[in-house]
Figure 1 (cartoon, rainbow, N blue to C red):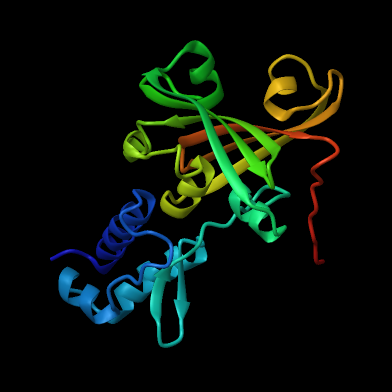
Figure 2: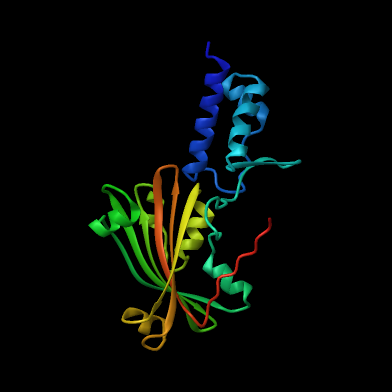
Length: 234
């Protein structure tokens, strides 16, 4: 007979795997405690212990009457939350349009491996433009690690913005942002419809779960059309 501690660890690992794999998406209600007790042949205390660890890690949340559900992903160690550009534009009352300029599945190049911090494997490389009210809003370059997110290979990113799809379907545990300013040249001039030397802001983002890197994105915004705003409490 297994020790209750071993059963608790098994429950935690298996529930966590379902969340991290995307099988249980944010908002999904997980099985009730009595169902888990029957599945694992253990006490309510053992189930509670496993769930408590996942709740404290931010992967689950307990809601009165609704039961225990998979949490919406929350950034823990970055100054900014991960934005959904399509939602940002909608909240401004503007119409949204996405132009997919490039989509390629390839063996990871040296640059891909550096940006994603992977040894090898396939990546999905995407270049797209987001428009607000008929004007260019952001130019996006994105790499998705297909070893971590194989289902991304079948998504129509001409219809669904890659960031929106990832936020809705792929759980993550950590994120990192890097913000820089530069003067536009080359590709940005045409893609964003701005003058040579115009001020731009670049927002780079890495997301991962555990030690597994999910995606790298670089989004470039015209400096006169975008502002970063963060609200803080003590």
